[in-house]
Length: 253
Image (cartoon, rainbow, N blue to C red):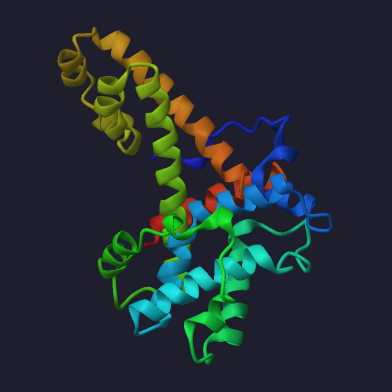
């Protein structure tokens, strides 16, 4: 994985239009764009919340109800009213909001009350792959992780999955599917461990050309990583802190 120190410090001129900052800017005057931005974030990071709720619940169906109900409330109610735009990161906001939600909702008698009876159209049931989510949860370590630590770990993994998916989509669209499939493992290897000669032979390239391609891949990965993190914080100065958080969570898991 590319270390945080290798990510450039350039400030993005479009930072104010990223998803989370857009949501916070519109919290007093809701807009369709801001609601869609919040819905996109919810779709991207629903599983870390499900893992947290599932760890606290003995019943899979209750956990599913509570997860879907939380996002319904989040999109329908004024959950953003107390968020300080100067300090609120989506990760921290989401964790605090779900803990507050569970404290209020845990003892409710049925799923209809928990979910408020409806779910907004922009985040329908297809946003939740329950079978995949439960399978992933059952593979989680059972004895080491608190619900909060599990949330943080899965948040970091979900973010990296999105970065890799975006990177792969770009290469596939450019007709470079074989190249990305061959070089993607290099992203998690130290430079000295990467077998450039073998990969070059497989791709019918010179080793020098392959090294250039690997360098470009890592550079684009770093750019997408920074961009994906920027979608969940309020200003460019917070990106480095989130990078350090990301690597500390995965390094300690």
